[in-house]
Amino acid sequence: HMYYFRYPLAGVTYKADDASTYLTIATTRPETMLGDTAVAVHPDHPKYGAWVGRTLALPLTGRTIPIIADDYADPEKGTGAVKITPAHDFNDFEVGKRHKLEAINIMDAFGRMNDAVPAAYRGLDRFEARKKVVA
Image (cartoon, rainbow, N blue to C red; front, side):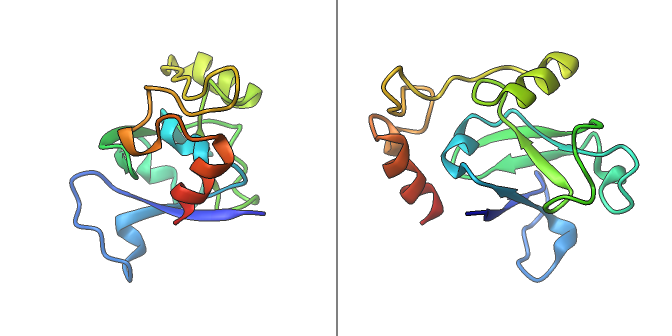
């Protein structure tokens, strides 16, 4: 299942009816958004290429993350913007190395959310955390 989330631009007033105030991200693993350290767009993306270098307010966390340009982002797939979670995906790990992104491990060895996530998610099983993130 694909889940869609709006990541608001940092420092801009979010308006649900104004797509210039957010990027929409599609993911199959919404719980890992808590460990995102960037959003990547293809450098030649006709819509988002100009957004590179701006920052987004990462939902639920109080952190900001950069919008980076990387060929890994496929402008024809999903929304054309991909969340980058280096500690929880092999491809994202490689993107993270290229861009010197922090890798934030958000789960323990048993798939429970650890202390790197906001307090409301700590200790939750990843599937319970997924439900709570989606809600």
